[in-house]
Image (cartoon, rainbow, N blue to C red; front, side, top):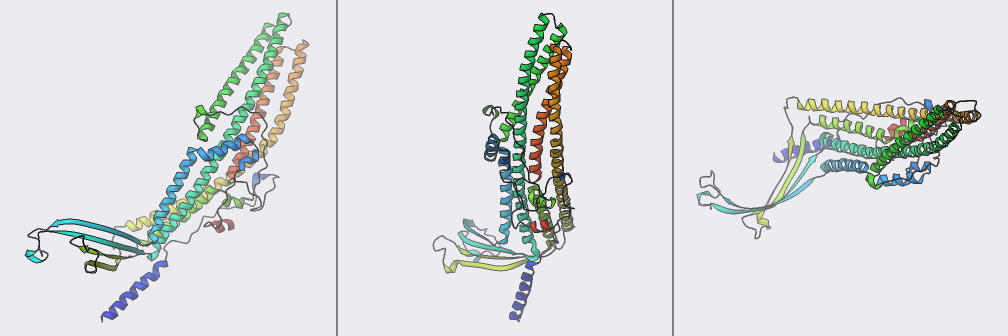
Length: 486
C-alpha cells in the first residue's frame, strides 16, 4: 500500500536522523606527562600554591623602568612581527567560522534570463514540430540544502576547527610573550653596554692620568721608557675596547628599533646607567605550568583537533544524507513572472554512500591517526621543554646570585691591588708592570661584575617567559579541567 511505503520511508528517515549524534572520533586522551611536586632548582625559594600568585599582564613593570615600559607599549602597538602573528590568528579564526557554517542550512537564489533557439531536428521537440525555433526563458529560483550530521562528520569538523582556532589564539599569546621577553632582554643588554661604556670611559680617563704621571716621572729620570710604553699601550687598548663597545651598543639599539616597529635612523635611546633592581618573581608549583603557558595550551588544542579529525576520516565509511529543496518561478517573459501558474518546486532527500574507493578512506584514517600521534608527541615535547626552561632559569638565577657575591669581593680585592701597586710604584718599590697588571685585572673584574648583573636580569626575564608571563588558560577552556588534574 502507498501509505505503508511512505510510513516505512519516514521510519527509515527518522532512524537515520537519530544517528546524527553518533560521533566516530575516539575518546580524547591528552598524553600523560609526569609532573613533579616541586622544581629541583628552586632551592630555598618558596613555591606558591596553585593560583596563589600571578604575574601581571604587564610583567615588565616589575623592573620599574620607565623606558622599558614605554618600549613594551610601543611594541604592542607597532611591532610588525606581532601584527603578523595577529594576522595568522585571524586566518585561523576565519577558517573556523567557514567550517562552522556547515552546521546550518545553505540558502541560495538565482535569476536567469536567456534567449534560446532549439534545433529543428531536436528529438522530442517541445510542443512538436509547430513549436517556435526561438523563445525566451526567465527563471527565478531559490535553493535550500542541508546535510544531516550522521556519524558526527560535520560536528567533528567543527570541533577540529574550534580547537585549531583556540590553538591559534594561544599561539598569538605565545608570540606576544616571546616578543615582549625578547625586547626586555635586548633592553637589558643595551643598559649593560651603557654601563660598560661608562666604565671604559672612566678607565680611559684614569689611564690617561696614569700616563701623564709616568711621563712626568720619565722626564725626571725616575721611570723608564718601558713604563711609558706600557702605560700608552694600556690606554690605547682601553680606547679600542671603548669604541668596540659603543659599536655594539649601536647594533643593539638598532635591534630594539626593529622590534618596536621604528626605522633605525629615526630611533635612539639616551644612555643611562642607573641600577635596575632585580624583582622577586613568584614561582608556582610545577602542575600550574600546564595552565600558565600558552604554547602548552596550543599543543593540547592541536591534540584535540587531530582527535576530532580522526572522527571525520572514519565517518567517510558511512552514508551521507542531504535534504535539498528548490522553489521558483519560470516563464517565457519577465512580465507576470511571479504568479502562481509559473511556480515550480522540488524537495527530497539524497542518501550517498561510496562503495569502492581503492583504499582511499583507509589511507585517510591512517593519516589522521598518524597526525594524532604526532600531535600527542609534540604536546609531550612542549611540556617537557617548558619544565626544562623553568629549571634552567631557576638554576641560572641561583648561581648568578652566588657568583655576584663572589664577583663583588673580587672587584674590591682588585681595586685594593691597584691602590697598593700604585703606592709601591710612586715609592719606587715596584715597576709600572705591577701597576698595569693590577689595573687590567681590576678592569676585567669590574666588567665581569657588570656583565653578571645583565645576565641576572636576562635570566629573570627568561624565567618569566618560562612561567608564561601574565597569561593563564581561559576559564572553561576545553581540556583545562583535565590539565589541572594531571
